[in-house]
Image (tube, rainbow, N blue to C red):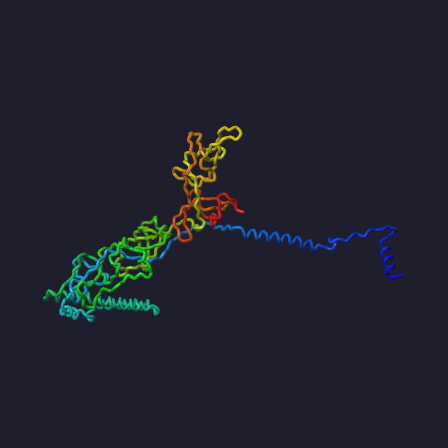
Length: 483
C-alpha cells in the first residue's frame, strides 16, 4: 500500500470514532491571535488618547495664577538733575593784579570785601610778601593734610580724573588759606596810604561766593531744555580764579544770593505718574549718605516729564556743581502687591442708587427691569441681581452684560424710572479665581514701578491677602469657568 493511501486511511480513522463522524472546526485569523495582541491594541488606544490630550493641552492658553502678597514698594530711581539758583557773575571794572578775600563756598556779607585790584604791582607784591605759605597757621596746615589724607583713602589707580580733581582741590585750599590771611595785611597796608590805582570790590548783597562758572549760570526752569540732560551735553564749566593779572570786564566770581534753590530732573512717564500725588520727596544727592527732603512739583511739557525739587538748605555744599546725581526714594506705602499684567479695566453702566429695591426672596437689593409677559402681554418686572462691583455716593456700577442700552428700570416703591443709556464709567480691577471661575474685583493703586503696583488693602468687597488672581488679565473673562 502506498504511503498516500496510508495517510488517507489515517485521516479517515481519525474522523471516525465509535462510529460517529466529527467536524473539524474551520481555522480563522482570530485563532492565531493571542492575548498579547489584544494587550497591545489596548495600550495603543490609551497611548493615542494621551497624545491627543497632550496636543490639546499644548495648544490651549495657559492660565498663570498669582497669589496676592502683602508688601511695600519703594520706587528708587536715579537721574541727573540740573541745579537752578539765583546767581550772577561779578566782573572786574579794572585791569590789574587781583587778590581774593572770600573762600570758595563761603558767605560774604553785604558790603563785605570780595576782592581787590591793584592796577600796579607794588601793593599786590607787598600783600603777597606778607601772606606767603610760611605765614600759615597750624590749623591751616592741618586742613591741607585732611585734603591729602582724604584723597589717599579714596585713591584708585584706574581713574586719572581723580588726580586732576585732587590737584585742583589742594590748590584751591592753599590759595584760600593764603588769601584768608591776606585780609589783615591788605587792611594794614592800605591804611598807611593807598592810591587811586588800588580798588576794593564789595558785595552789593549778601551771598555765597564760587569761583567756578558754567554756561548755565542764572538758568531758570522756563529755559531748561531736554538737550541739557543728554550725556554728551557740555555745560562749559570754567575756573574763574586768576593767578594774578586780570583784565577789565573779566569774570571774577559767581555769587549766589539765595539759600533757596531748585533741581530740575527729567523723568520717564511712569515715574512722573507715581509722583503726581506727592508734594514732598526724599532724595539722595550725589550719593550723600543722608537723604534730603525736598518740595516737589511735577510738570509736563509736551511729551517730556519733569520733577522740580525745591530746597532751602545745602546750597553751599553743591555750589560748584551744575549737574547732580539725584536718587528718588518715594514714601513707602503698605498694601497688596499685584503685577501690572493682572490689572484690567472693565466698563460699567452707572445706575442711580435710588433704583435699588429690597427683594425678600433674594434677601438683598435688586434692580427691577420693566418687561412684558410673552403670554398675556401684561407688564411685569424682572429682578436683576447685580453683583456689587463698586458704588460711589450717587451711582452703582452695573455689569454691561446684565443690562442693555435702552432697558428701563423701575422702582415700585417710589414710581421712579431710569433708562439705561450712555452713562458709563470704567474701573480698574483684577480677576480672582478662588471659586473656580473668573470674578472681577476693584482695586485702587497706591504706587507702582515698572512691574508691580501696590493696591489698597481691606477695601470693601475688594482684593484680600492670599487671594489667587489671573496673572494675565487679557486671558480672563468675568464669570467664565476655569477648565
